[in-house]
Length: 269
View (cartoon, rainbow, N blue to C red):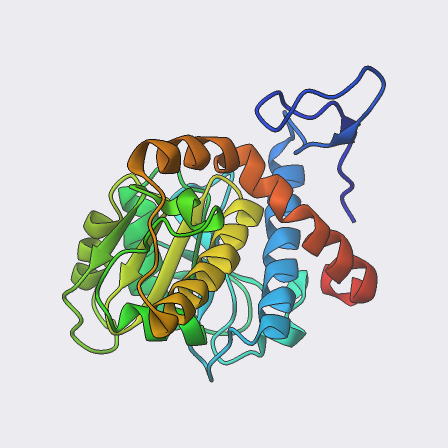
């Protein structure tokens, strides 16, 4: 099990008194150590997604780029329950769909979407897509998240809309178009399909999926009750810059990491 060092929190999260420490992502890791971190965060994210009810049959996938071979990514085995995935169950697939490591096949839709997202965004380590309930409901509207809450501001002017749904993704060309719709944002709403988020770590990408799903739920509830009042653009941008980014995203995931790794340590096997 890889541990995270205690260190002063980055100034973007807040200035702390001398001698007060918070966990930070490990830096300057070797290839094997970095691979271990990414795979452990993948397994933890799948366990958490199972608890949140984000699974839907065999749909849904989270990927992490391999630190040694950036044209390959680690992903969940096709047809395996999120709630049972361990580090040793993860499979490695390259951008051509070749299984490089593992005992089970990859979901073809996962390959078609994620291979092209990773290809389009070399800065991205992880990508997340599941058929979560409120994400699906919100995606049916074909509209962006509105800045109606502090949490939703994380996505203000930082997510795209993919409106060309053509059924189950079975070709990389559609994955390429999804990558175009994502652009340089942290997320994309796949109309009539669901949500997809990305990040510089698995933890960041997973956190943004969780909070985007909840922001979709909040907007749906607010719209059902009346006409939501928007946060003004300048404030929304300020809040986005205050609460989002690689480090805040990673850190927001931390309490969930602590919970799931304590309660289900078998995920490290």
